[in-house]
Each structure stands twice: as C-alpha cells, then as structure tokens.
Image 1 (cartoon, one colour):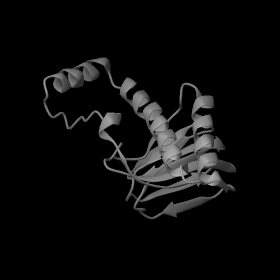
Image 2 (spheres, one colour):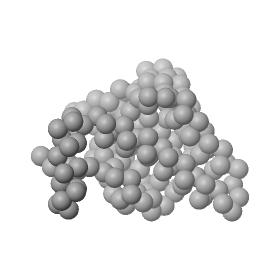
Image 3 (cartoon, one colour):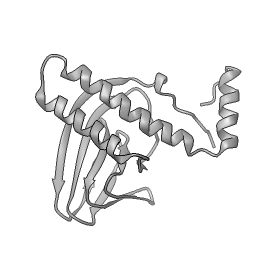
Image 4 (cartoon, helix red, strand yellow):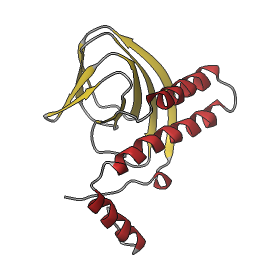
Length: 168
C-alpha cells in the first residue's frame, strides 16, 4: 500500500481542452479510454459509474474526477446535466473515479459555470482565465480529499514531507 499526498503546487495542467455542458436522458453507456481527464459538476440528476468492480454514485451538486485512459460505464438514473472540464494534467490526481460532495455546492457550481462562461466567450485571455478557475476547483477537490484522510495518516505524511522523504 503506497500512500501519496497530492499537493496542488506539484500539479500543472499540460493542456486545457474545453468546458462543455452535457444533457442526457435516462440512459446507460460505456466509455472507452480517453487521453484526457475530466472534472464534472452535476447540476441535475443522479448517476452510477462502474469501473473494476467499483461503484461510484453521484448526485446533484457532486463533483466527479475521471482520470485519463480508463474504461468505465455509466448509468443515468434520471435525466441529468453536467458541466464537464476536459484537460490533461502532469500527474494522476487520483488513480480512479473519485467523487466529492462539496461543503458549499454553490461555490463549486459558480466555479464550473464561470469556467464555462469564460470558455464560450472566447477571447485571447480565455484560456488562461479558465486555467485559473480549474486550479480553484482542483484546490476545493484536493483540500477535501486531504481532509478525509485519518488524522494519524495526515500527520505521518506531514512528518515525511518535513524530513524530505519521498512519500510517493
């Protein structure tokens, strides 16, 4: 078992591909591996994702991270709507599908809508403005993930980091 604490300063987005709003009726489908990662915010509906015998349930106001190059299937339990950000990142944020219910879903929703607005408005600075919003979303996501570690593990990682051990 290898425990690795991902720090936002160690992550950089290699390329930003776009922000999209997807609306679907109740359906099930399979997704082949894609060469990019996805962060999505569910504005409406519920879905279940399946991968390697793991089941991830997402509901309205949840964020889902999908790493690049994975197979998965999805079943929408209701009509749904998501705002999806496609990007390439230098490191695996998480090795598998990972969901988060933000403490303040309004902040998360505003960030995703802001990214979508900036992307669709275009302009010479749109790319950089979208990147800054993506980093804000990643900060929400990674901070929450770090808080979910048991305190003893968080403390051990902090000690290893302070003593310059490679904790990966």
